[in-house]
Image 1 (cartoon, one colour):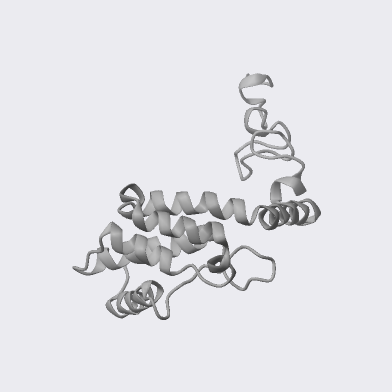
Image 2 (cartoon, one colour; image 1 turned 90 degrees about the horizontal axis):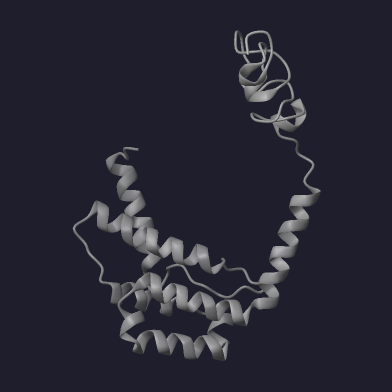
Length: 181
């Protein structure tokens, strides 16, 4: 998609703000009352901002700069957790992690999962119960099937088969029977 000049400039300002130390995105932990974002979103926003800036300017950022910003953005409850304090020090001192943004993010994610195991398990349980109680029916559910499993036909529309049988059993029976099968 083509972005106009003013749109690109606005997006660059936003991306630069996201990676700035003073007003950029932060990770505060996974507690239920936390106003922050999940770790995956935090990492994705930082990475996306760096990529966007590099694609639209001549600026480049070293992996070390990215990892440093990743660690500096951990604050709030997360910054108080002893396991994460030690993990951040390890990332900044280990050459395998210090110079590899994605590896550092993965390493820190494993430590976050340990610290917030209960909170993450509750989020998963809550998400599952929300999905189970969701009463919104999709078009396929309302028709009694989907593209492959019958109902009122998979590919509806004029001349595309009739009712029942799904993909292979339309008006004329498709591959598996019917008048012309």
